[in-house]
Image (tube, rainbow, N blue to C red; front, side, top):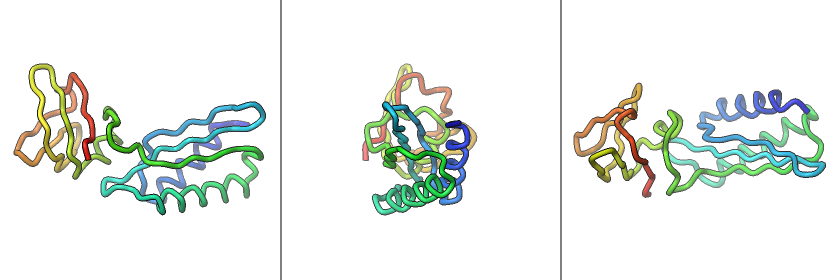
Length: 139
């Protein structure tokens, strides 16, 4: 099985649904495959949206016979996940973050993300390059 075809199909389904793909992995486990997706939205994703997405993905995988023996898990990253990618910043707008920088740290609501700039409710604006420690979602 060519995983690039599978990745393309899954990425297009997720994109059409207006959902952000945080992580996608496919692992061989004996004679079957484990497909794991982490998905989110800036306004948060719920269980029914994950279930609906999983159903659509299964229908396509089965219909195109991309895999015959697989297990599919679709979930959200949840709180406590460290943020580092552009998808992480986009999905974290409106969330309460703990930000660790070289000589400073703060906790605030992220109001906006655009082109590498993070704007917080307290009026602080920083670039993602200024973050030398970690950023964690608290709520």
